[in-house]
Length: 475
Ligand code: NBP
Image 1 (cartoon, rainbow, N blue to C red):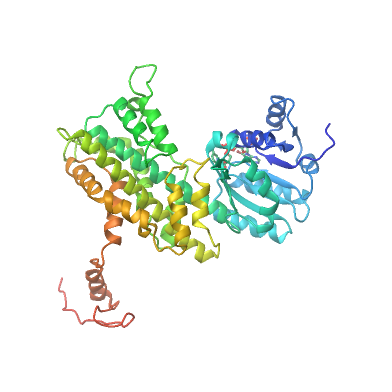
Image 2: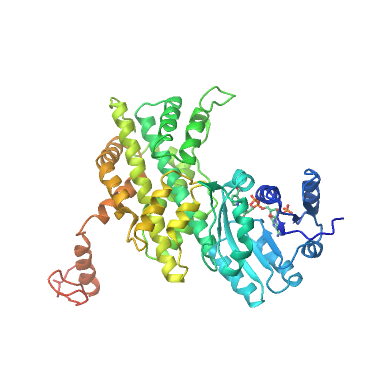
């Protein structure tokens, strides 16, 4: 039985927990592990002999095995399981001990738990851990919230286990309370947007007659350029994969019904509550929802008329270049929207989020890791109070350059009947933002007409309200 105390303890040895423990131990830390089903922890330690790992079958033994102040990381299922583990842990902990929730918890749950544990003299850190199983093992992007005092104590471990890009660890203290889990939620929302945009590019290339192997080559080429990212890379590999049973491209035999775990929907709700537009992410979440209604779509496909969804006879090479630009521009809009939402919440909650640093820690370890993220860091450094990412010189020039092709792609998609909800939502946002005058003047007239809501005038100071006696409408 080891007598030395462990540096940190982890509860929840499913796929994420196991890989994170192996990562932490490999950086020179002794780790105690505990799992509700105790055999899982014992088997895990037995499978890794010679490591500084210690399985503790009881929670009391687990807590007693840790050096003070104790650092207890939870990697259990988000939701009720986190509360259940905290309930059992609390009586065993001492003031200043740190409980870290590394699961995908909703940031408002994190804020509730933070308030509860703080009142008990404990410290709570809700942290985003991105990158799935491989990230957990080899280096995730880590987004810790919680009090600044915890960052000083967790920093050496987190910096050691995080992904490294250009010699910098992909972790930074995000902010107090639920800030870490909030930023992880936005990361996931942006991930939804990126994935849908890539799927729309795929649909367009397919409509233009490209085969799966041809598209694999196109995405591979794109991955060597400005669009370089993990998601483009895996898309190329997925398109190149053959189904062993049929010999067909695997994407052709996969059913077109998307799943989701809910973090995208959380992002939508948060944007709606804060009157912020995230139309690209919105379109991405809704595209998944609509895809799941397969039977209804199959039925409607024989009842609702429209073009066949093909782009036959198109200049393929030119079109591929246009789709590239449309994808890049749409992606920038999606990030601009996600960043704008973070800015709104940062002000509202007093989190002081450093958007440039957040973009920097997303460069490695996480699903949205991409070359262009350093451009966001640069833009934020040049102008910390940037009103919208699209207005930063690099992105402004990029959008101005890409917009003719982007427009051509959306127009051709609409004409051919290829649904591109995220491409079009991005373009509509771009066009709305650059419209000095929108038709909201008529909307105000309508509101004043039926509800006497009043309106402002273009020729009078802002804030002065007017009402018109509109003609009566009979019937
Ligand atoms: P799961 O989300 O599948 O959770 C399984 C773990 O939770 C097991 O250790 C299980 O113990 C434990 N658990 C449950 Br379920 N209910 C419990 C309870 N009431 N009390 C104590 N323990 C309980 O594991 P995961 O896929 O490794 O994910 C862990 C967290 O990381 C989740 O929040 C997830 O959303 C997040 N995450 C996952 C990924 C990914 O790629 N999987 C990526 C990023 C973040 P048992 O063995 O006794 O059933």
